[in-house]
Amino acid sequence: MTLATSAPSAAPATEPRPKLMTHGLEAWFGDNRVLKGVDMPIPAHRVTAIIGPSGCGKSTFIRCLNRMHEMVPGARMAGRVELDGQDVYGPDIDPVLLRRRVGMVFQKPNPFPTMSIRDNVLAGMKLSRRKLGKSEAEGVVESALRGAALWDEVKDQLKKPGMDLSGGQQQRLCIARSIAVEPDVLLMDEPCSALDPIATARIEDLLHELKARYTIAIVTHNMQQAARVSDQTAFFLSGELVELAETNTIFTSPGDRRTEDYITGKFG
Amino acid sequence: MSVGVPEIRDGASIRRRGRNLGERAFVALSLLAIAIPLLILVGLVAHTLSDALGRIDWDFIVGYPSRRASAAGILPALVGSLWLIGLTALIALPLGVGAAVWLEEYGGRSRLAGFIEVNIANLAGVPSIIYGLLGLGLFVRFLGLDRSVLAGALTLSLLVMPIVIMATREALRTVPGHLREAAAALGATRWQVIRQVVLPMSLPGILTGSILSISRAIGETAPLIVVGALTYMTFLPQDPGDPFTALPIQIYNWVSRPQEAFLVNAAAGIMVLLVTMLTLNSAAILLRNRLQRRIRR
Image (tube, rainbow over all chains, first blue to last red):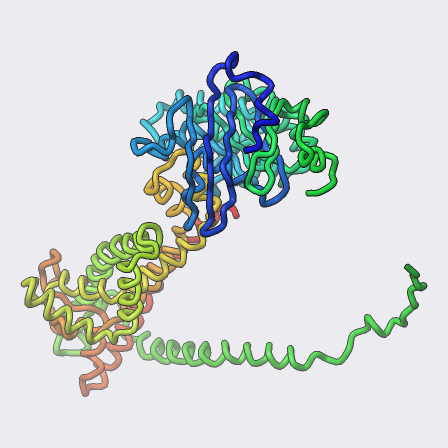
């Protein structure tokens, strides 16, 4: 593996155990091997950006972390993924419960079309657990929408369909929906690629606030975005982790020639 | 690279050309294709209606059959039909939707699912009288339900289930995969994804299938004759075990009488059947449209 160049400058000895850790993670779609053994820590309460050209396996990588990858017909994986040291592919692990701790925000905003703004936020709660009291539910709705910086825009129209919001608002609604179930980790798969620059800026601001409470991994093919929002950056190429380092380091003095070529726009 | 000065074309290149005869002919053909069956239908209904108008009154609707055409009424048949439709909907819709959900969401590409699928497709093509024979053998004789409303409804349920199943599967398939993923990523089990996201979104489509199947069931005559619907009933069915008659049976009975007056009765019966069906369908369509408006795409 090529991690040698990059042993995260924050040495593992002094750092607490990472929130998520992968060991030799491999993934296939049918016969197509899209991840070729990735060892990568994702430390708690930091934003980890994952960059790389299309088809490098970055989306597949984060989809392995909450076991969404296996839902695709013909998809397989091998290796280990640990959440707080626990193997999430272990025989005693319920992927449904795992996903309540490792939430995900998708590329395209996808509020549930049959539900109001309020019901969208509560969807995860309703899906999973006990009945919420009315006042408790209102509390969850408000704090999740505040957490996603959407509350002030929608507080007077919680009964309106979620699909009536603008694209950027819909994506923040999806973030609110994810954080309403109080996960430990938020995985984001190019969450801004369908949004305009203003909506993108709002979500990027939001990420800085969210990392105090959650561990965040964000896939992006926008390098400026990675530089703006993340604390550490991973560069993927052809299913391999080429380099993982502090974001400053990656963008100022990358350790690997291929990282440098990608960042300076020589390919990709 | 040499870039030539773009030549200035004359206005002819964007001027209307010809009269587009092909398209016009196609539109005319399409209109004709709608107009012909529509005219035939309107003619039939108008003809029946003109026969029926003098006959339909309150006494006809709340009256019992009689040997005198002028005294005969249709109440037992109307009530019997409503019983049949209600029971058929109760039996066929949950079973059909359940079967479709299993086939589409759980069965996947398993052999069993494939086998069931082929069978359902075949069932949809079986003539309805065969269902009547099956109903007679299975429900009336083997299960000992006798010639009851329940036996009739079970037979009709078999008949319409393929329609319900196929319409429901189509509806389930229209729910985009990214919404299923979104629900799964929130920590929903498979059933929760189906219950909270997939079914609400496909409900309008499922209702369309239900409307079609109920319309089919309300007009069926042949299987009910085989199952043993009565043709002369002087009482109303009180529970699912009672014998019954139905509107199409009563109409069929009147049509086959030689006296002119009974033919008029049949026309009046047909109007009652049509109005019943249209009422039920309109209710279902209104419900569907309300649900559809709730879903933003």
